[in-house]
Amino acid sequence: MKTFPLALLFLLISFALVANESSEAPSSKAPFSANMSETTHQIRIDGKRVNYIVMAGDTVLSDKDGNPKASIFSTSYIHESKDASRPLIFIFNGGPGSSSVWLHMGVFGPKKVVIPSDAQQVPAAPYTIADNPVSLIDVADMVFIDPVGTGYSIPLGEYEGKDFWGVRQDAQILSEFIRVFITKHQRWNSRKYLAGESYGTTRAALMTRELQEGWGTIDLNGVFLISSILDFQTGDFAPGNDLPFLSFLPTYAATAWYHDALPDKSAWDSQATFLDEVRDFTLNEYATTLVKGDLASEVEVTNVVDKLHAYTGISKQFIKLSKLRLNEFEFMKELLREQGLSVGRLDSRYVGEDANLVASRFEADPSAYAIDGAYTAAIQSLSCIRPWCFEGAEIQHFIG
Image (cartoon, rainbow, N blue to C red):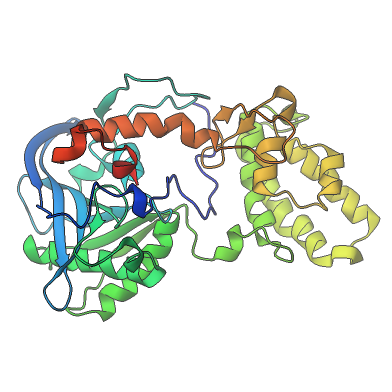
């Protein structure tokens, strides 16, 4: 199997279709009836059968006056033994504005949607939903959480989505959900972990503080940071900030390697050797030259131009005009421009065609529209429990 960059590691936006108030469930102000479905299943992992319980549904949270303020939708996978000594992992994606569908159906859940690992495009339905042989259900219980405004999670009563769509407010409501969950299921003494992706890593950091400092102090045993974005300077391509140009370069190089876009790929005996060289160049010659700015010598600038061309396949002229700084959106459009293709931002294996072939940026992320349909179909077919789910509700309601 080919080695490929699954994601640009310092992204501000994860796989997400940002939800807004107009895309919530039919009416968050109408009488709300909480739903919870509980079923039993089994899977074979490493040759051993694992029996587990799935709980999918709503948890209604109330304000200090006892009035409902939000319903949080979650899908929990619990070992049939309900052994409280098992680790308990709370999992969410980022955006902000994404439900947990991506980590749920693509990484950790017992079921996954099958996407070809070397595909450039994903075909239309039907999609294959299969057991996930690398799911963590054999070693840990998992709770996938959808923040308010994503999935089936909605504000209630007099509350609106904007009451929860702030950095701290978001962390507070999900921390409150965790407190309610571990109280209801008697998991206070379990080993507890958070797993967040992209903005979810920022959320996890804030939730760690909220959980430790809130009522009934909750100390965590660990935090998973997936596609981490804790320092937003690493993803902000703003004038005067050179960090993203440095942090993205190895991923640009890996992307060019995957698409055979390098001017001389045979110069390296393996991708690992190639990327080691790129990282060493990034931390030394490239960083030094960018910091020097106009003080860099002509020899230093020429060296950087030559190596950026060799490592990314982008033309020397383009690199010179960009003042040695390759913006991620421009790179994704420029890499395969001569073929009339743009590469994906969140998963740069994927390619797409834009109507405007001479634009400086792609029109939409090919990696998003390549797999959205597959993940949407998968999660809808497994978890649609709402009465209005089959009454023409928009897909946006579920995936966030």
